[in-house]
Length: 296
Ligand SMILES: NC(=O)c1ccc[n+]([C@@H]2O[C@H](COP(=O)([O-])OP(=O)(O)OC[C@H]3O[C@@H](n4cnc5c(N)ncnc54)[C@H](OP(=O)(O)O)[C@@H]3O)[C@@H](O)[C@H]2O)c1
Image (tube, rainbow, N blue to C red; front, side, top):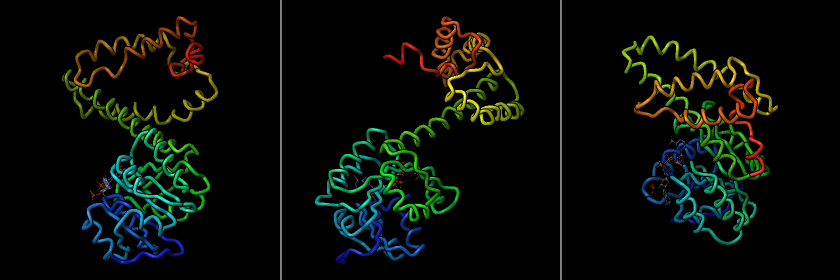
């Protein structure tokens, strides 16, 4: 195995899977010094052919690099690789580039702190073929100083976005965006299921569905602003009017394959708000902090 010597600015890519491979190829193509390690040795051969330095261990790769990218399946793999590191890694930045939970990110940050390195957590809003293009966004959280130090290199992979100094912020942001997509997509599927079951032309219906979804998109900044200002104007309907429609919908969706989308919880919340005398408010009030929840 080639002996790896420290260089001016070397990047270690730990994990040569789909994302790791795309990241390493982009870094090599932009003239960077890249060392690569992969658990299954043969999988990094193409990257070595493309100019990456091979290495026999995670420790060897990490100790020779300034920026260490863990492009691994999950945080179990991240912790296993971090457990192989010891000694003082101060001056280095370790980035966990995988999808996981807030706790996963927190535990990874704790382990990296023990090693004396800076930690960044990354949420990848991109597929491997998007890496290195403007279409990719990667969210980062953790050490702002480390993000700034490596911003130029991180900017070669995607549009980098720093989303907070708590290590878990990127994981929460990333997962929440996935959740938003699921909510919207499953809402659409539920709607298509309802109209198809009723014998309505799905192709014609979808035109009106697109317009309806567009209202949510157009009004999103206003909704966020209302939430931040803690004012909940009725907008197109008051809470009692919403409650009436939601009760009709609950009956319409009864027995549907994907369930009714949690309408019972929304109805209960609206009823509680109306009982507090907030019937003139709009739907955003449903996520207002209740006085009794705030003190909980
Ligand atoms: N692919 C996408 O489109 C995409 C998009 C957004 C986010 N992500 C996220 O990015 C991360 C990487 O995804 P990917 O598509 O690159 O996955 P992948 O192609 O399956 O690669 C996973 C890598 O992790 C390594 N690995 C797994 N367990 C390990 C362990 N215990 N110890 C050491 N190495 C281990 C694998 O090594 P071996 O070769 O030895 O198995 C491989 O190098 C995931 O968290 C994924 O959710 C992926």
